[in-house]
Length: 376
Image (cartoon, rainbow, N blue to C red):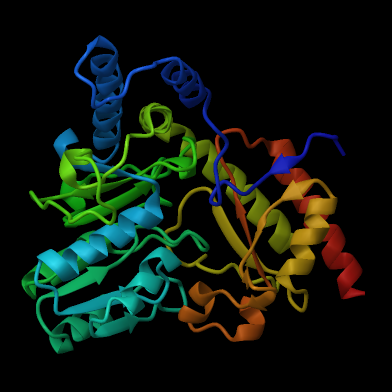
């Protein structure tokens, strides 16, 4: 095996794109504060607004609709609080497979909450959503991600938005994992709020965005200056925003390359299934992100797989999260109806633009070696 480590954890954080790195280095050399009126401040402001335009273009909307945040978590929290505090929100309806940055604040907001499970394929059923909308106090907010971060299963967001609007509800779409992997058109999706994170598509950590369909003015989570039109106080992270914008532009231009990534994902899946035909592919029956494979190794805990693969030079993620030293099964997989035992055996391979055939073959060899050893 080659000495070069194999990184197959793009859904956790993608490598920094060269375009983003170059742009960030230039921004770090810019001394001005974007709020200053002198020439240095104006130059810094131009960098920030250029990034806003690039992010808006990624999702097919206007730059004025983009509110920069510190990441997807802040963006989701900002949208939920906007709904409660400014839209007269009466209830929340969220899918059981949402990211914790939606589920946890939704449970803490103090509004009536309905959690809608996904089917065995990892996709939320529109009939279940319609029933929840009928029963929920109005107005409601529906939270449905565009693509799941663990299984890659793509959700029926456009259809859900139409249902929500028919019931006088709004829809929040967490598109963090879909950004840079799928073409996104906010108008076609019909969502009222959409969230993004730079580091999932090749930008830096610490930058994200809340994109608004209408002219909402979210009450800030923090108070101070009037940055982001009064919606988010604090001097802008200029280098982070510049890197976000450059990554968004590069990711959009590189979308045709996801065909190659899909072929590599399918090659990996075929190799693992060839080694272990009983290995379940979670979300495999649904339309998925082209880079994502969530698969179980029967009888082998996910953490064992992750450690063994890491020792073999292959980086992947477990389908279970570790909190305060206690390993718990993935809420996404149990939200699909999987037994806890099966959920504890799942790992996620997520590929990207730098992934090669040699990388997936090496990952398949390492996974197969472990399976053969454990099976004996």
